[in-house]
Image (cartoon, rainbow, N blue to C red; front, side, top):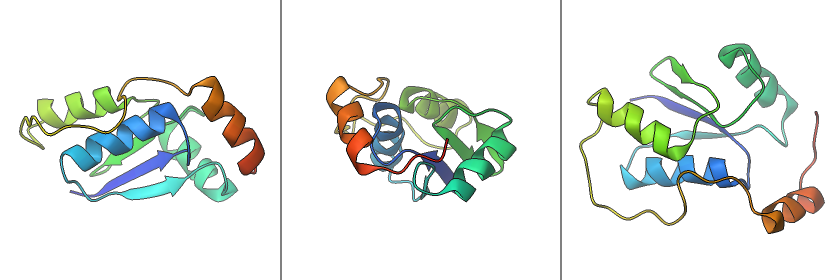
Length: 111
């Protein structure tokens, strides 16, 4: 399976996607859309919209998606089997105020 995940370096939604992909031991390309303008432009072009996270699985783009929705897609399409493996973060939650404060001081925004 070829997985490209267009994610923010620090974001509740992005961390939820990462947690699900790790839960199922799926290798994926973690593409930083905050600190690389070309990555963000590629995500918008491929997904047809500006919101993240976006995850491309074997050429199928899942736009503006949570970790929970990624897992539902994987299970519904028999790409993974159900597992009781734990996750290390919320899979369906945005950033906290603390997360937003950290991003404001550590990232370069192009948009």
